[in-house]
Image (tube, rainbow, N blue to C red; front, top):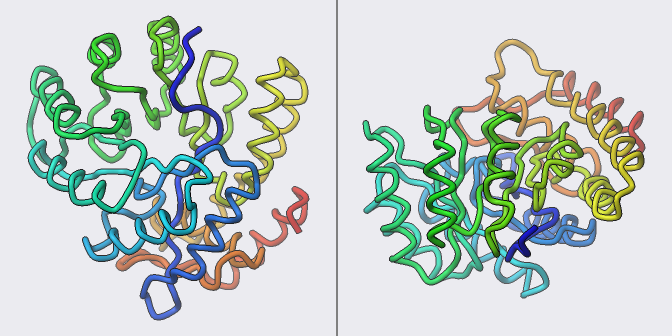
Length: 306
C-alpha cells in the first residue's frame, strides 16, 4: 500500500447560520473545535455539506477565513472549489487559496455538456494552475455524471490528483478504485459514506469524509483507529452504532427536500448538543422544526450522545 499525503477522518464542515439567515461565525468556530477535539485528522471546508452552492462569494471567504484562523495549523484544511467550468474553478481556486488551504477538492464540470476527454483536460489545467494537491470529487448526485475509473486512475498515475473523495455511493466502483491505485505513492481514496465506512476501510480507503462526522467525530475516529489496528469487530460495532445515529436524516416531513433533510438533521443534532446556536438552513431550503428535533433528540440519546 502507498503512503497517502492525507488520511484519516476529515469531516466535511457544515456552515451554521443564525436564525435570521446570516452566517454564525461563533458557532462555526465552536464546530471546528468540536471536530478537532473529537479527533479529526483534518477538515474539509466548502464542500456539499457546507451548503457551498448557496453561499455567496463573500460568505465563502468569511467561512474560509474563520477556518484558517480557528484551525491555526492544528490539522490540515482542505478546501472545496466548486464551479461549472475549468476557467471558473481556476478563478475560484486562486481566490480562495489566497486566504488559505492545504489542498483543494474539485468536481467534474457541471451544467457544461462534456465528455471524458474534456474532463481529463479540466483536471490537468486546474492542477497546473495551483500549488497545492488536488482531489477529484466524485459526486454524481450533484454533477449528474460519475467520474470514470480509467480517468481517475490515469490522473492518479500522472500525479495530477492526490486522491479522490468518493460520494458516488457505488461500493463496487470504490473497491475497483482502491485496487487500481493501491500502489500509487501518495494517493488517497476517501469515502464519503456514513454507514459502510468499515467496509471502505477494509477495501483500502485512506480515510473518511462523512457528513455525520460533524455530529460524532469521536465515533468515526474510534472506527478509523480500530480499523487501523486490525480490530474489525470493534470497527463493525462502532459502525453499527453510527448507522443507528444516521437515522436522524430520515425524520423529516414531506415538505423537506432530501438535501435539507440530511444537512438539516446534522445541524439540528448539533443545536441540541449545544455546539451551534441554530439549525437554520440556506434559502430556499426548509429548516427542520420542533417535531423533527424531538425525534432527533431521542436518537441522540439512544446512541449515547446525550
